[in-house]
Amino acid sequence: MPCAICGDTGWKTIEIDGVSRVTRCECWQRAAVDRFAREAEIPPRHEACDLDTFHDYNDSLSKAVGRARRFVREFPAVDRGLLFLGRPGLGKTHLAIACLKLAAHAKGMRGVFHDTRQLLRRIRQTYDPVTRRTETERDVVNAVIGTDLLVLDDVGAERATEWVEEMLHLIVNTRYNERRPTIFTTNYPVEAPPDAKHAETLLERVGFRMYSRLQEMCDFVELEGVDYRELGPNPTIEALSRLTKRGSQTHRALPGPTAKAQLKARFKSAEPAPDLKWPGGKAGS
Ligand SMILES: [Zn+2]
Image 1 (spheres, protein in one colour):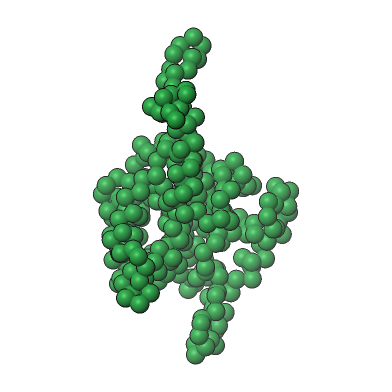
Image 2: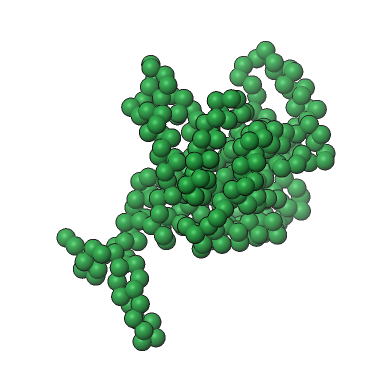
C-alpha cells in the first residue's frame, strides 16, 4: 500500500511560517533506518553509539565530537574523511559508528562498518578452496569500495605485509579517486610518545604509501583521556573526571617498550603471542 502522506515519492510538503517547503517524508526516514540496520554490519555492542551519548569530558574529546558533528552535517559534500587516533578505550569506534549511523539515517546514504583485520580475513577466506564462502574476492571488495560511507576500524592492527598493503591501498585509493569518504580509527600514534622510545607509529604499521594517502584524504583527529571501559557501562561524567585525576589503570599498566621487548623474547617460542594491548593492541576502543 503506498504511503498515505507522500504516495511513495518520499517527499512531503510542510508549512513553516506560512511558507511551503518540501521535505523528506517519515516513510523515507524509516526506510533509511531499516536499510542501515540490515546492511551496515554494526557490531551489536556498538549499536547504541550516538554523538549525544559520547562523553566529552576534556578538550580533545570535545573537539573530536565537534569535528564528527561537522562531518555528519556536511556529508556527503565532504572533501575529506576522518582518522580518529588515540589509545584504546577513548571512544574512537563510538564516534566513527555514530557518524556512520547519523549520515545514513539523516541522508539516506549507504554505509558499512568493518574491523580492518576481520575484513582482510574475510577477503583471504575467498581464496581458500576448502573454507571458501559463497562470496568471491570481487564481491567483498566491490561492496566495500562502492558504499557511500565506509568505516575502517583499527587500521594498523594487522601488520602491513605486501598483500595487506596492496589490498588496503586498492580499497582506500579507489574510494578516494571516486570521491567517497572513509572514516578510520587507529590505536597507533602519529609520533611515538617521548617516554616510549620504541613504540610503533601509524606510519610504521601501515607503510609509507598508505600513510601518505591517509594524510591526503583525512583530517587527523587525536583523542586523549582515560580508558572509560574501566568504569563499566554508561559511566557518569563525575566518575570519568575522578578517573582522569587518578589516571587510567590500563594505560599505566601497559608495558613500556623494554617490558614489551622482554615479553616478546620470553614468549618467542610459545604460540600464540601474548596480547600486549597498547601499542600493539587489539580492536575494541
Ligand atoms: Zn511517505
